[in-house]
Amino acid sequence: MLPYHQVKFMKGDCLRFVKLISSDIFQNKIVKAALWIVFLIHTTMTIITGYFFTHHLTPQEIFGYSPVFLEYFYIGTVILMLLFQGKVIDNIPGELPLWVLNKATRKTYKEIRKEIIFIHVHCIANLIVVVVGLYYFLKSEARDNEYFFPFRFFEDYCADKTTILTFVYKSTFPIIGYLFFVHQFQLMYFTQHIRYQLMILINHIENLTDVAGTKREDKLFYDESYQEETRKRLIFCFKRFKDFVLFTANKYTQLSNAVIIFMLTGYLLCVSVALNIIFGNILSYMRVTVMSVGTVSGLCGLMWSSQSLENIFEELLSEAIKINWYNFSESNKRMYLIFLMHLARDRKIKFSANYCLNYGLGLASARATYSIVSVAINIF
Image 1 (cartoon, rainbow, N blue to C red):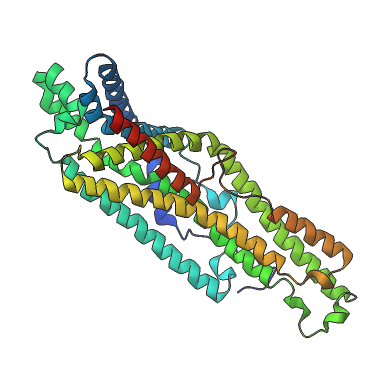
Image 2 (cartoon, one colour):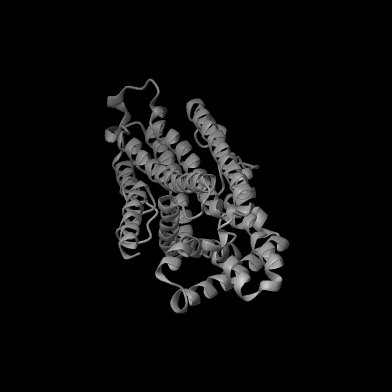
């Protein structure tokens, strides 16, 4: 671990692969153009599907087409976010200078390295799920037109162009599959960078009073050099924590409305997957398996990322409370108390008064999905 006040900033990016697959790739003009094309194709077909739902299809047919129809609301939201707010995590080191990881203790550094490996393995595993899913979804099934309304629409109203239109529609599947995981990767990149930096800050808080050395505790209150060094260390930790608070508050403000939309469309996605699993609407067991694994993996990644950031803020407060403050001067005690008051504030990723992005939201989502699916079963 570096000396207490010596600061070195990270020149590279320990999560650069995660940033590449979740942000950098979408800054390319060709990729943006592809996103617009996918958005226009699927938005058009979703509007057409919605029209037929209300005018021509039977309740049983609506039930069959609903899973694919509901999925698009999530994908459409993802595309719009990438097009209009695609640089949310583009320059985190520039907005919040990141300490080098060896600023941490050896134990913390090893823990961080293990988690970095885990995150990369998780991301690669999800990409493999996308590839496997594409193999099974691009293969034509005999009854695909009973569950993908666009295929039926092409056959009924564009018979002479069915082949080319089906090909164009299926050509969007690789992008659609990839987009299911993009915001999970982005959230991981954002939360874990903050978390690693807070882990290093915790090390500093743990060592805040080690300046006392072998001095007798009953003499520290009157030791000016001890009090001055303690004051500098408190200011050092307080300023660093303030940087995190301002940075995260700015990001939460940028994303607050988007998170609400993602919550609603995410519910629809969960309902869609649940209907597919229960009724086998997409026919192939492998399709169901891939969708289930991908959805569970994505939701777990989102919940874990948010919960881990929430936990590290709580751990930060817990360590600060353990500081031996009784030998501090009166001014240092006041500064320490102010520091604790800021640490004690709620630092959850909130998007409403009652809901935060954490494990609790995952349970609430599961209950809401169960309720909606139960109602749908009774209706149809």
